[in-house]
Length: 246
Image 1 (cartoon, rainbow, N blue to C red):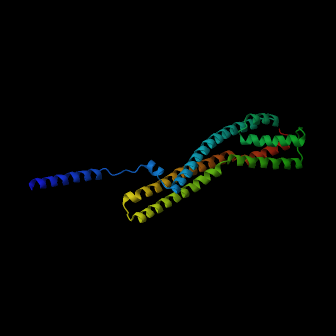
Image 2: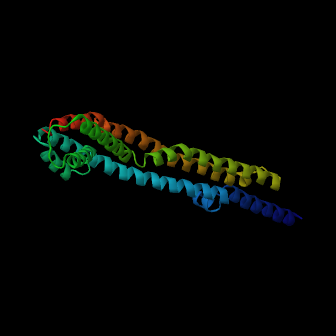
């Protein structure tokens, strides 16, 4: 009898140790496995947000290169424009700085001026000056649109990514409640994976949106700096053309 009691106690002790050992090592959630095992709508949301994030950083890199070179060449061209004694000298400076918006505005105006005057620059009459002013304003608008290219994409990514991520969050939480209802259990192993993948969708949405919004505001300010003197420059070109380009 004593031996049987001893064996029973030993068996209970071993069972308690095995139970305690398994309880001390709970299953851990792996974010990669959660994404790979997520539901199809959540996966679709994550794919869209990743594409948005890649596009955002591509646009950021391209705009940094574009605006940086445009600003440098614009400063050099304006210096050459102020020093030039004739439109011919300005035209040569403009041909060497094709990334400068002001250089392209001048090139458009100069080519139109040569066409209207037959290549003979001189004092302009009122009709020719009015036509030249319209050409300059159209060229200025075109340069503004060129500087603002891809900005709409940044604005779209920044404004829609949080809502797309929120859709993934709502669907993931809804899926978690459906799992509770189907399995009649609210244990963490049932709801934790669904809620975790929902929160991952929210996080990815913010990762895509925050850089887009910051980049949009930064580039908007830089574009404003570059384009600040477009109207004044156009008026000066027309005024100088009326005097024969001197």
